[in-house]
Image 1 (cartoon, rainbow, N blue to C red):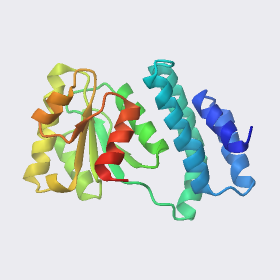
Image 2: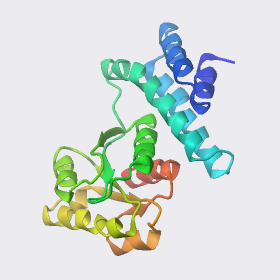
Image 3: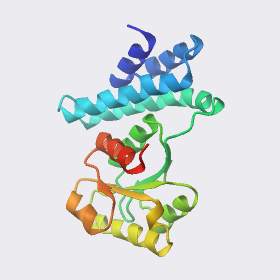
Image 4: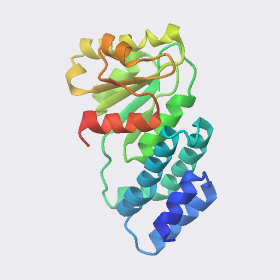
Length: 210
């Protein structure tokens, strides 16, 4: 098994220390940071997403894989910056105002990072104006999560705030969470709905053409 295959396996298995070690080894052997990102981290996240879609793993396993990816990315990122490897796009993510749940949001954020996106994690209970500020600061997409039926309605406030700021046409809005549906996304004027972290990555790549 080659270095990149071992890196992918370490990430999918959620082995943080092994993932860090394999990135370090790959860099020392002369592999380019971009190749390590593409064939190691991004490929591992794709495999993890496919396993989840097939029902072979569940959210806890996805979380540990994403955490291993993040540990590996921590080693790789300075080398990506040094070599000028551009991110796919900047994405601002957070839970809707009034909602304090963050497991789903954290998972999506880590999957986006592992797939080459620059992620600004605004945390929980995020006011619409904070999403607007990040779009003004270069974010090409906003991703909003909600777990409660009472707070999911606040997602519409983010869309409306972007409209008022004359920014709606230059940003993609993605929503997700347990009570969210594709119909609800359309009703509030969002660009798309993602049922899980893997599909969020796929959808943003489509929306942003990256």
